[in-house]
Image 1 (tube, rainbow, N blue to C red):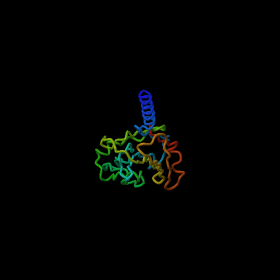
Image 2 (image 1 turned 90 degrees about the vertical axis):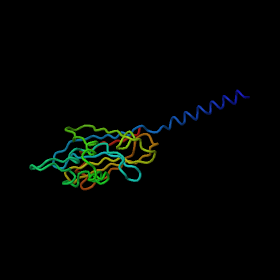
Image 3 (image 1 turned 60 degrees about the horizontal axis):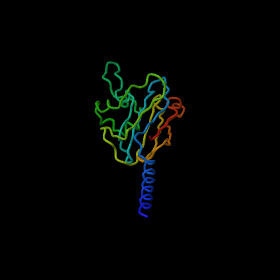
Image 4 (image 1 turned 120 degrees about the vertical axis):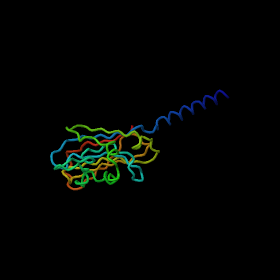
Length: 192
């Protein structure tokens, strides 16, 4: 009887461990999209970031250099792109409180606008901007792109730190939808 009890206890423990193993928290979120370089002023700007459930930016994964560093014009010093092109990824600018960030802070997540078209991939490892692991909870991933100063497309997906698999992303357009249709396509996000 004691042997049977031990065997049953062992079997129940093994099943419990197996079911818990199938519910592992994800180690990363990967977001990817097909980027097609566009011609025209105010084009090819985008940002990718994570917010917590309170709407605070946890981490910016990427923002194009023009948005954060701008370009020097007519012998004047460079000013941040969003200051003279207010439609330059405005949701990210507002969410991250860009005006309060130093140039060094901006440099941490700024990158050159891709010189050619192709798939862009960004990964979040569940850490904040300082590299600290974030608490378990609910989060949102955002991708926002600006085309020709006025066409803005935003993708957003909500998820829990316990979720795994692909995320459903909501796509919204500001201004003319046609102005964004080819710059950012095939957006995917997956928790792994």
